[in-house]
Image (cartoon, rainbow, N blue to C red; front, side):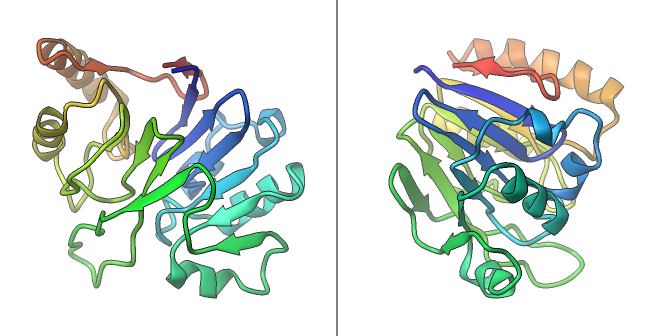
Length: 211
């Protein structure tokens, strides 16, 4: 497929193709982690933000990316776009551009208030990032799957993976788990999903995976 994917801590994903680099969901957990070196990032052409929660969007992170990569376009929800107007110098789009597609991917219900607008995004006909959703109904060959949260569960994530059968899964949205527990669980899931013909990757923060 010729794509390189790097996870940073939680839901932040760097996707690199021979033509461009795209950063998905620059959230606060990733920004505050030593695994992230913004100066070492390639020039970013697009920043995609699926919704406005802090673990997916942190303004200082976005500002640092814009400073390091002049001229990228931010693709996001109408709700967040309205908040960003006048705060950043980048072009903001609420429509899919170029190699991007949107798909129905509503934010799951949360216990602390109303769920925000959320977009699911396909990139380059290969990669899918659903934001904070485990009930979407489509994927490309490579799926960044949110694994656990106050609004979701590992069981729901695995059921969705088996239902949609992507070729490759990059687990995301797993900051809430202790690393020791996460490691053991992911090893078992890799074996389980291998029997389904699905390659479940176990990413190391800041280290690219080629797909």
